[in-house]
Image 1: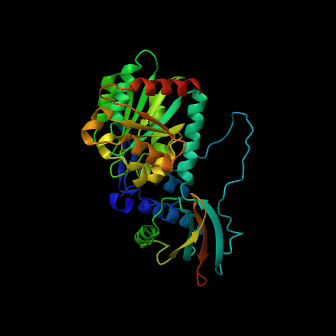
Image 2 (image 1 turned 120 degrees about the vertical axis):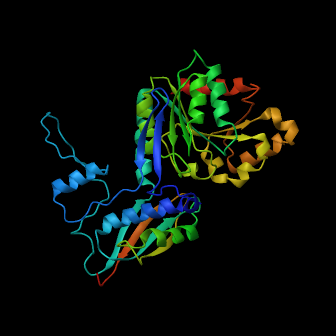
Image 3 (image 1 turned 135 degrees about the vertical axis):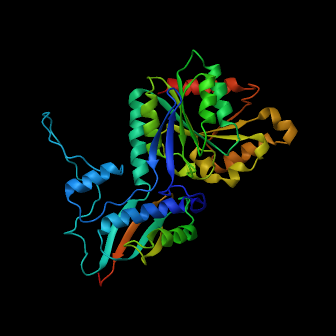
Length: 80
Length: 302
């Protein structure tokens, strides 16, 4: 549920932080009780990043505990 | 999932209608244009104003108090970022942080005012509005009640609440499938509840998404109704885990729809062993008193 809005939030958090630097990938930590459907989130991620500075950035998942739902880290592209 | 229903879509418009004045205001105005690059600070500021974008106002401080600028928020430090030649940047930023921060502020506002805020969740048609109507009528003269109504469209529910005798604000979430903390903050400010007020928030009828969004309420209360079947708590465990009280409504219909109360109670306990359960009928008033007593007890505890 909410994956479209969540994907937008993730893109906003990373976009704001990266300040125009090219991003290769973003990792999100998701707990079993976060109510987040990973496949749906990945689907929405491609849609919301299309045509933005985050276009092409991969979305990866990291196992976490409980209700955790955080942007863990992101990777800057070396050619940027 | 909300990729289908489109909540949080920037083209989505959220409005708030004050039933007392009939005035409707925009809470979220749909697509937010990006500030074009290459504008001077003054131009960018004017652009933000013209397009209703969030922005800061710098202003002089001549009213003589100390400013402590705390520095514990995560924010970009370009000098420290491993930027230019690649690398991984740790963020550890909660994705719902914005909503949670506003919810925490709401909670403080409610506590400071001595207002008891309750967030009612259910599937559409379980009888949230009917329960609130019955509560307002039964407590007339005993308790001040104000209601925030969340629905995708129409102010039908807020009109019903107002007819029952309470102040009401209708929030229309458009495509959105749940209330968020900023909407409740705006509505609560407009309602301006007096100390001791019961602020009853009727969320959008949806047993999925509202579980994720803290509004700053003292507790969530789920309403289920007998025709829905006994297994709702098993089908939507996230929601039933998030509530303190479960109200089983439409008990007058239980014999007609073959509702098994014991099985329903067992299912609630299976996902949330600590949940209180109150069976009643908002329509006939059957056992409504148990709910009213509990409500007044909660208010006395704030």
